[in-house]
Length: 219
Image (cartoon, rainbow, N blue to C red; front, side):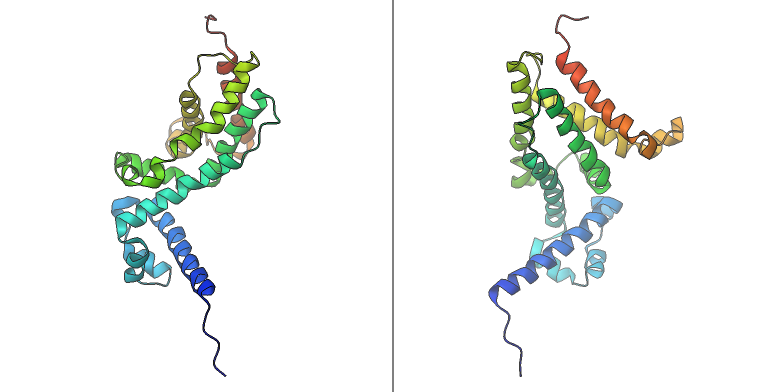
């Protein structure tokens, strides 16, 4: 007896799985070889699909690369949006937000590589993404609320730009991954040494709290 035809829902699940598989493989390919060096043929081979099928789902190599960037950025923005720190004191909340970025970046080195690659291309692909253009506010909303609570309680200085704080967190967490090998070659220290992990994680929070609680008149 012939099997019943697949339902629309099953066909959609198959499409979603295929698209997700292509994105996962493409993420590793672009992260390892960059936008210029990555080959759609190799992505197709590693996903047991065809170049034509990839073009069907994404339109072309550039669109696939942009979709990879969108997925990578959306993942960290989703984690930030899910972070519940309203019950925490402002100091603890800012530490928790910084720790989330610290943990995410360490667990997703491909994200760091993709960011570095896109900077080499002067963010020309991100600039073409309507999805990524709308991620600025979500990245800062939770941080801004924490800073406002700290200011209202008289515990944070009132001249802090949330984007500056975001930059400090991102800089520390990205540097630790992006410059791991050159830093180790020059200074003989692996910034991903497990024995120093908690030291760096705490250090990031300490720097933020020191800056946020420092009086503007303090020398």
